[in-house]
Picture 1 (spheres, rainbow, N blue to C red):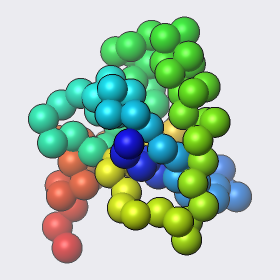
Picture 2: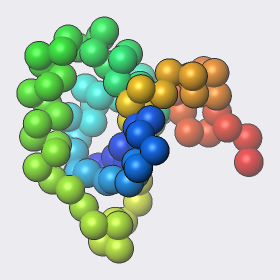
Picture 3: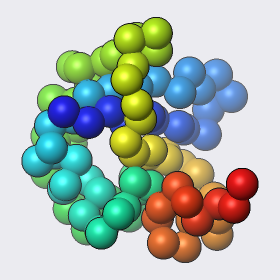
Length: 96
């Protein structure tokens, strides 16, 4: 299982974390080393219905933050303006 953090454009975003199977993770983050995805790109690539079915399963597996052992991916909802920071859809695109 892999953990993903969900970040959306709402002012009350809670940055929830959910568990995904390795197969689900591979569908949502298909690129080599990819750990960032934008929901709009995923919809274009996978299709709204198939992505909805995949994510319905994921939404049933929330993880409380104190119980998280690593975050393997981040999915952005309605935050396309952040794409300029992640040209390779990898967290390490951002220099720290």
